[in-house]
Length: 177
Image 1 (cartoon, one colour):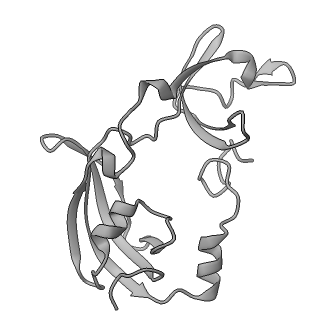
Image 2 (tube, one colour; image 1 turned 180 degrees about the horizontal axis):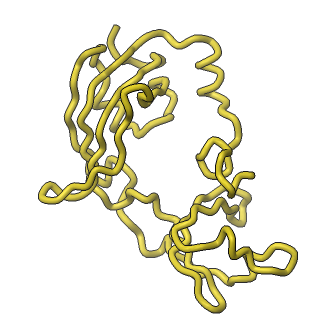
């Protein structure tokens, strides 16, 4: 079976980010923990899925996605200086959770969930970066297709209606508890 829409897909890969001259390994699946998804549901980058379409178990892949195909360019306007009092609980600044590099779930004025990274904490403000951590990076995937099959009804339902997460961690971090 080959990768096509609405198939359960398991791949193993190494993901490198950076320009062609200097790339850093930023993610690697393990032997027993493949990256899995159901194709065609918009759960992964469209360009990632397109590069994998037509591959079968055992096939290798090695491709590059440029920022416009991945997480976009890094935008300075997505870095905001917010008043420190926005991060208070019962009138006290939350210094346990609002620290440099912390991932913080937030809501915009329309109630849409955003995830930001604390860039810095100063006397009266918190600088939040709402760019994706890989925004502006060229991504290089090297890997192999491990499995392609029809998804079970349970897998399909889970993919279409995943449990709510505050920051993408499967509710296991301090921010979600």
